[in-house]
Image (tube, rainbow, N blue to C red; front, side):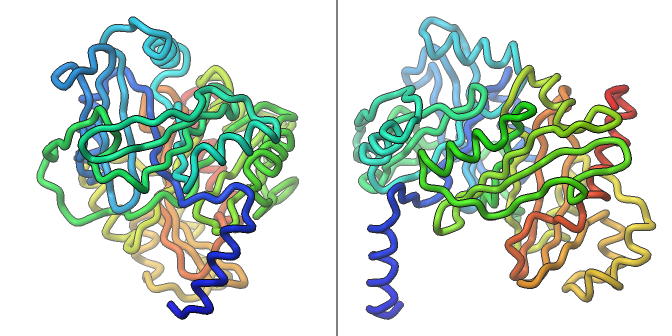
Length: 380
């Protein structure tokens, strides 16, 4: 990196009212964290790196920290709800099922980020506090976002431990194989009808995020159901949050179904960036992960509008991988079915080649695939 480029980046960071370093962790509240950790180790190829539980002083909760590249998931379950946090987590699982409670964001200065957020209308959940152990110091603060989701602001530049103070290093549950994904690409939130613009404004005002994409009307509708979506992102595009709301249509949309079964707004899906979606999908299918199906007809004309990609059309057809192309390049993507019994949280695997889009050309095919699953469940 040249000195000029270094100076430009430094100046840009100084100008950003709410600088972020990236996603720190996606934190799930689950009914059984030990089993969740095993599932994501085997099915997603993630590596257990840290643990907190009764064996090292956490009498109320057990948490397992899994990583794949820079992507970090934390699965927490309540052992005995003796405090406000324990009761919140237990109630969250009872009301929503397994779901995301925290989209934690790494920031260079948690105190400054928290102060800026509160000055611009955020609801504070936890004032900045230092926590320490032999590996150094972490500063944490939390603000509320849609539903019962929170953003914990994590300042960890002075910390070298496996996750946070209170956690100990842990051995992998299974022998890790080739890495299946290397980063969190984006995290999607579902909110109630009429609330999308309110939360877009929240991210604009509270965190200085800008609007990246917008999908409304025919962009994002089928014969039966519709929704609206806007994407907000930080200035570096490291943290991207699409926000969806239902739209009036003939039948129940996927957003309506999510809101009904999750009992309110929350995180719908997490997109994971991979460098080799073919190998990733093959490995995950072999480990039992179920993906949405795409009719063969989608692939019959794919080359006419999507052009040539690094993956042959017949391989895309075999694995049911979708393609989208825009002025900047193309992307390959596929979506899992919900990963718990409630039709709520699912995952997307995405491989980008220039495109910074979200698969607009695939919306119709994707939503029709989701509707076929809704119909099987009797929820369309």
